[in-house]
Amino acid sequence: DVTTAASDVIAIGKDAGGAVITSAGDGTVAIGRSALMALTIGTNNVAVGFSALAVCTTGNFNTVVGYEALSQAQDEGNANTAVGFRSLYSVNPAAADEGFNTAVGSASGKELTTGEFNTYIGNDCGYYNETGDSNVYVGHNSGVGVNNNNNSYNTAVGTNAMRGITTGDSNVTVGASAGVAVTDGNGKIFVGQ
Image (cartoon, rainbow, N blue to C red; front, side, top):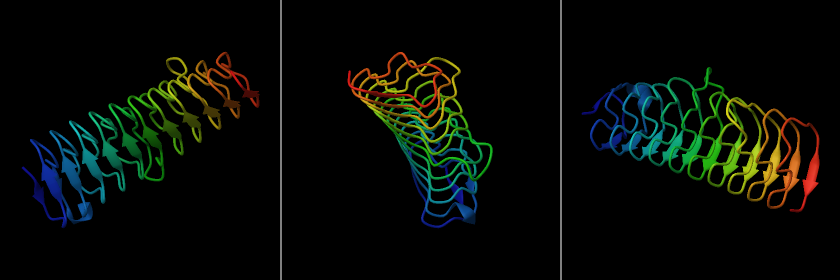
């Protein structure tokens, strides 16, 4: 049940928009069981899917579509876009000026916690990058990395491109499996398969 002082709120589904939304929560759309269930003052958030943006209390301008997408984002974090099953699942920025991530694809950016300005397009892109910033990973498994890694300013385009990245920064790979062995190098360029 939604209790709100906000205007233009739409909540459909058990516990969707279930917290007391203040007037600062204007423009909220929560569709699906537990979608935006903890929101209190975040404004202009849209969450569609089971537990989508479920624990967010104060984030603003987030757009989320998918089962448990961006579901761990608690307090801060703005202008994130997550589309797909558990995309940006673990994002939990420490400050209001953090966020601005885009993830499209099942489990893309799943383990990202405090990174910002990342763009992930494709299933499992950037999966294990926990705190990296300003990466662009396009293609299935590009920049997937290994558990507990942190890399920033990388660009990988192609299926499995830069798949093994851990702590390397400022690398560019273009092509299927290009730079697949890059782990911790900096400033490398790979083109082709």
